[in-house]
Length: 103
Image 1 (cartoon, one colour):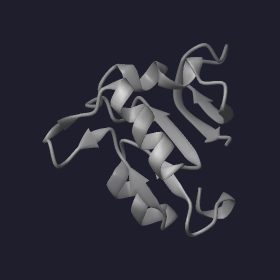
Image 2: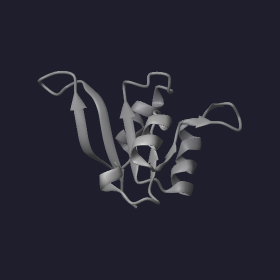
Image 3: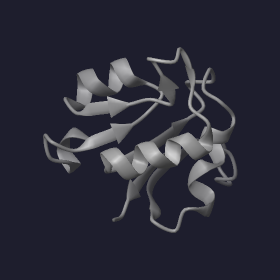
């Protein structure tokens, strides 16, 4: 992410601490800290519109996020998968996907 983005770019990831540290980019999570709860998918649409993040990262390594976060990009025409890692040789079981958000 660090090598393929600008310092002002924003990333969405459940791994906020790691992502911020390694990428040196602002990272947004699915958790609404002021309300002490996870955003709903509809609320998260507003977060995307407001912050205009460049990347959306989905990973099975952060299972504490709401289930909707894994399928969130599926019906978004502006979410373009750019890199994926799989747990199987057939590439049917993704474990991490990076989406670029096109505006």
